[in-house]
Image (cartoon, rainbow, N blue to C red; front, side):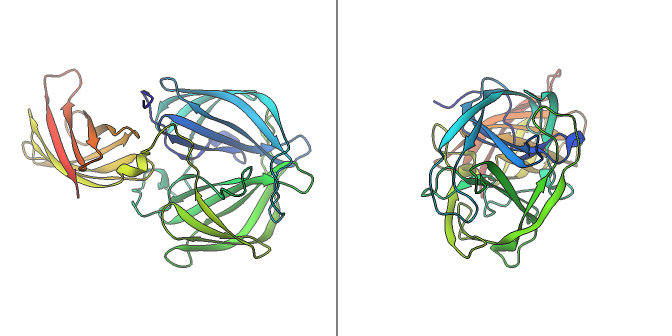
Length: 345
């Protein structure tokens, strides 16, 4: 049974704007979150921690922070992780899909979604774009990758190990594609930034060219990654949620109408990450308004309209079998309400 939760956090890159240089890769699948924090150890070396997968409780995610040791390096042959270490606990209370308050060994800090490009977090997500979240090579468990594309610009991180077995990470991008489905550039590495429990200090680029990288997508869920030594590995989405479908299965363009105290039409796009963005038109008031919201992996829809007298809330569900969406709308603290329905185009 799908977890019932109050807030659906957006998958992708998160950070505390007051603590640039360290941040978080977060993905939610069916109410279950897998999180990684990228930061630095006391010597200045880049390191990472992971939490989950763990199911949300209401609007809260809580899990132990785990340090993994001894796994595969960037260009090394495969061998599994040799050990783990508990590094404390993390808890995040989400106030809305793009903001949360995180408590971990470093204290309590606000976190929010990270714009890879200006306005990127709120940009529409194409149903054919690479899916945001965790990717891996199933034959090389223990190292993985986080991918997000905003307005065509990709930002990627690889979580793995150095030659001594210490956890480390590299970044690729932000970068635009060289062709429709291919991104090329270099891995880079940062160091000397903020530790888990230390005061803020900015990170520094310690290696601007760790090695070449080519990422070619065959679909929104399948890709090939060329490593600096020329080895090509297959990548696919890492599924960790308790059930399928994920929110990405509902992605597409929807249009329909609403009626009741007001009537009109709406047209929205639903991205792979579950975000809804679009517009509506009121025939009673003869004006256009914006619509935004989220869908859960169970198909539950929550939208809010803004741009005219008051804000209306739309609550309903999508039928995965036929792409129909139905529900009710209302303006809080008023008698204005009605129904809405639509179809996937």
